[in-house]
Length: 207
Image (spheres, rainbow, N blue to C red):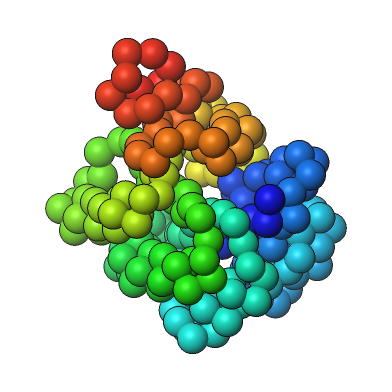
């Protein structure tokens, strides 16, 4: 398949891209940072430098690649956990406006599926919860798949030295368990505690 990964230079994206390439897929990796294009090329992706908030450029970029599947791994989070609150509005905009733009670009490109990341833990502020809910609602209305990840831990995350409270998932396992979303039915999947299952199911990581 041809797979477009938006947010390819993020902590999950840099792990997901080589897994998809190893499975024989043709992958485009989108980043807004020109300095990360070389990294994505090394991982086996065709680098695409684009800002998700430039809707016209995004549509051209996605349509130009012609994907079967679009992964939404976009966030706008700081390097340090202590700065999360200051970045809240920025990340909410990514979940709302960024998601709308990416879904529109995927539809214009004729992509058969969008797979988007969300969270499986309770967000601390009503505004944060509303933005996450808006992302999920938009993706599900488009017939896509929402992945609710547990809190990520491991290299490059906010929890490098030890796991946080549940729900949680090691970032390497999160990437590995994202690949099967290519084949699951539209809906919500929870990826936590090194397991994955449809949300609300009795098995796996459903919560």
